[in-house]
Structures are given as structure tokens and as C-alpha cells.
Image 1 (cartoon, rainbow, N blue to C red):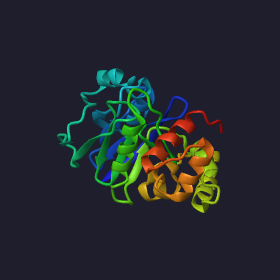
Image 2: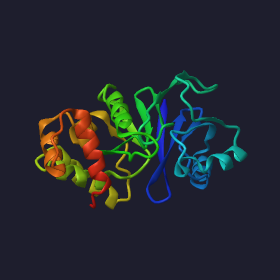
Image 3: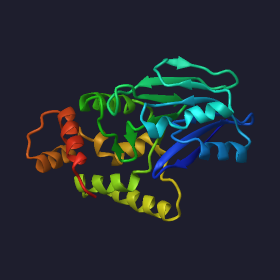
Length: 245
């Protein structure tokens, strides 16, 4: 059985701990800093065996070296396809997902997807050293997974992203209801994550670029005629870069 815990870090990061019960073996996803992970491992009596890194940005990797001083850890940060870890009973599928960065990867463990900065709740990552086209195709690959897939992004951006989504689709009831739920959770200092692929398909404009409502909204905002879902996505991602909540 897996238990998955969000460990807050920095301003809005989550480090995900994937815990195999009853052994308490743990995988650490994107440890941007070590201290909160060390505290959680002590509190829950965990036995970390590996670090899974989605991409090279400092707020996802900076804690790895210190954690390796405390535990005998394997560190994964390249696409190895399917692999297993000694003592851990679940296969881990590593999936290339360029777009936010060229080296970005996802980790799929059963029905749990750890997606770093590729997909956020109601949003997606900025493009750094890759392309918007690559990011679009990475998101379309995620969209082929079962809709019940649980999704674990690396940042608490949900409210800002839903505010943006409501500008794109002001008549989308699912967006407005989700925004109310997210605000109630954050008022209690609770995570809005994980999300599900089904919820993202209902509320995330970056997964809805094939829909006429999103296409028309992006064309109106950008004053451009857009001839494909990919073109809608690229224009939407660029427009969001300059959007102020």
C-alpha cells in the first residue's frame, strides 16, 4: 500500500514523499531542500531509499546532496523507462516530458503521476530551455492516461491558475466550483493537491485547447486566428506569461 505525503518547502513548493506501508520505505520527489524532509522522515520513522528528480531547477534538487549524507539513496533524474527499486514493491515508469525544460521527466507509479512543473492544477509550466510545442505534446501524452490518474504537481499554484482559467472560460461552472473549494482549503492551510486527470480535463484551459470556447477566447485575447489546438495552446501559454492575477 502507498501513502503519499506533501512536504511544503520554500514559498509554494511541494516535496512528495511516497511511502510503502507497512515497511515505511520512502521515495522523495524533487527535494528542493533537505530540512523539511529530514523532519518528516524522523517524525514518521521513514526509511528513504531513492530520490526522484523531475528536472534540474534548484528548487527541485538543492536538498539532494544533504539527504544523501543522511541516507543511502539512489538518485534518478534521467529517462530510464521502467525500473524497480530493491525493497520497493511498485514499478516506476519514467516518462520524458520536455517543455518546461528539455530534461523534464514524469514518474508514474501505479495510478499516481508525479509531474514536477509540466502540469499544474488548472495550469502548466512556463517554457525555459525547451519549446511550447514540446510542452503541448507532453501535456497531450498526459491526457491519454486514465482519467482517474492522481496528479501530484510540485507547486501550490491552484488558486492563481483557476483565476486565470475563469478569464478564459467565464461560464465554466466546474472552474468556479473548484475555485471555491481551493480557497476553503487554503484558508485552512491545506494543500489543494493532488488533483486528478478528470478534474484537469474539466478545468485546465491548457488541456482544453481543442474546445471551441477556449479557441474563441484565446483568439479574442490575442487578436490572432488560430488553426489548431496546438496553435491555441502556444498562444495561450504566451499570453499567460504576461497575465497579472
